[in-house]
Image (cartoon, rainbow, N blue to C red; front, side, top):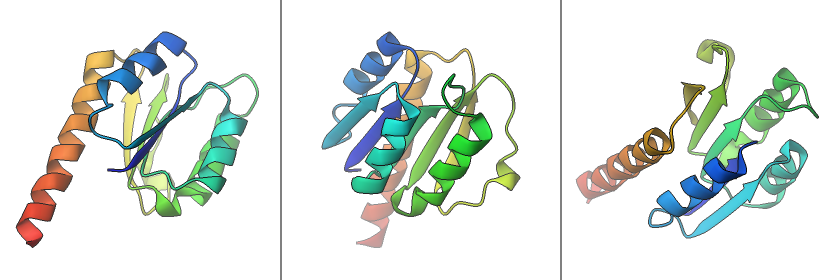
Length: 127
């Protein structure tokens, strides 16, 4: 994969994930601001998104709708939430994974590594 956007409220977790996945991506973007994330999605080619959905500045539903609208280039979206979101309500071409809080740095990195391995294996099978 080429690029990842990490949008998390917890800066330590965001930085830890960025360091943990550095070998899998050519470009890593991080922000705590959901509006900045939306702008990045509008202006950059992002392949993988890891994001909280609970922000004080925007309603979760509104933020998710924006992400889904902008997900045309995304391969994978990892949503992190306190509650359970219904995947069937999310109409996206991207693979959507939902993780319930609390999440660990190790579990997020393992998800990214597994998805990366699957993509590499799939590409090998195509050749």
